Image (cartoon, rainbow, N blue to C red; front, side):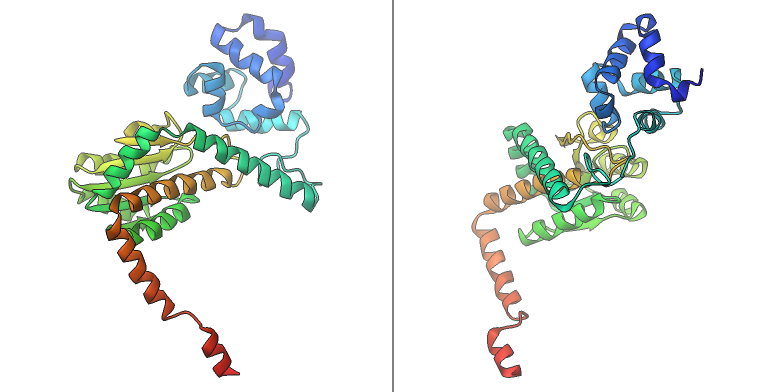
Length: 291
């Protein structure tokens, strides 16, 4: 029998002979195979109460090189054509359909993120960021734009900060980090080798590491403090959309907290920047003069 073309059949036939942990994984796959193909390994391990390596061993037992390989084959077996765009989107969706699917899924996910945030943790992070000598926002790939957005917000609060997406620049900066410096490391999966390596170097030099990533990810384990953003979006298959917005939301919340913490200092700075910006904006009087 070709194992890879008969996943459901093989699990159904052999599940009674599996270990207790493998049985939990197998039952979840049999009960909701359509959800499994859109699920991250972290989410499946949580639902089955097993570790990520146990999921990998289960996939290897079935003849796959990893969880991604297993999911892609399961999707083919279920005759699901992956669109690689967004969770739940199908090729025949019309504008009304995909507008609602993307919008509703995003709103629901962001609501879950808000409800999961720990107020004491957020308050502690705001204190740390407010007192930082310098903040570096690190993000690679899709997280690079999130890091850049965070830089724009925290710069306005009067904190010395930079955004970096280059692993080599991050590494050099990590090597000269000092106490009082803070790194905000942003990653949905928290599995980027370069990012984790650079975080370790920064921590060794005395830097404080704040992670914005999934709970219990390899990155989260290396951080001084971490905000668990557990969005069920498998970026091995789909474009990072919901997870990116969730990270932006968390950073917006932290930025507002820092602004409030700094009070008049931040307000006065914002006022001066707004006044400067008004000088370079195209005014109605200039438009009339052009006519």
